[in-house]
Amino acid sequence: MTLITQVIIIYVYLPQTNAILSLAHWQVLLLLSSTALLTASGNVINDIYDVSTDIINKPDKVLVGKSITEKKAFTFYMVITSISVGFGFILANSVEKPALAGLFIGIAFLLYTYATTLKKMLLVGNILISILVGSVVLITALFELFPSITEFNKAYQLEALLHLTVFAIFAICVNLLREWIKDCQDMKGDHASGRSSLPLLLGKKRAAQAMAIYTLILVVIIGYLTTMELNTDPISLYGSLFLIMAPLLYVALRLFNVDSVKEFGILSLLCKVVLFVGIIGIGFIKFTV
Image: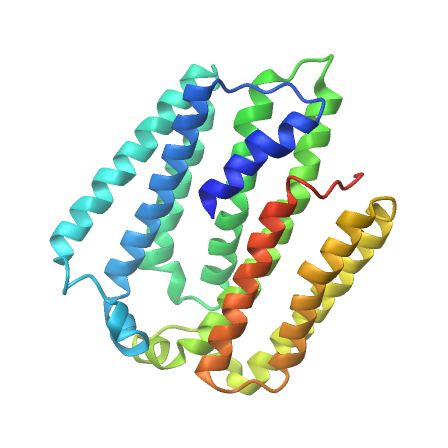
């Protein structure tokens, strides 16, 4: 999904704008490779520190300690993280914006801190990982738009950046919902490993009801933006209505009564589908912000 997001932004959305793009094809390849490896490294370090929890929540999917030793997994994590940051450093210097390399170092640090510490903290881990999901959109926008900004094209560059920021916020909000739903799935393992989560604090039923209210508010906000910004574009309007708002409304209504782990899993998958549809929509939905 990370790669699809970046490809759609670079090759579908941005060429339709008046923005001046900064990256040549080889630089785009560096950006895609660096981001993909950084995402993979986050998954690896998360698996390493999640073994005790995953044995309870999803024993069939545990790899560290079974298919690969913890030492080898950590070595693999160090290698791909180093390559990712190295690619990011080369890319940032190639566009004469070396400070942008700090984004990859910072994200690598946050992913490690999330896996080792912040994931155990109430709400903090959920919010952080959701922000990092949204950062995929913003990193792509920054590398394509920021190096080419001049006094003459500044308005166009910022307009494209603002448009993509709307989608980044959407990704953050939907992923945050998915993180909370996953916490309801993983209560047993989280409790055993000493983690703090919304369902452990409020209880599964109350947490689900709180998530339902959050989802309804999200639907209202999306609905407001949709009717205000897409009323002249029927395809985008009805696409948002039936492919984004309707599934989220279904999730909200089911959360008021859901109880089983299996049902939470279905709702989590549905949130992922909505997120994917939103990613595809980057290339087609035209907010007039």
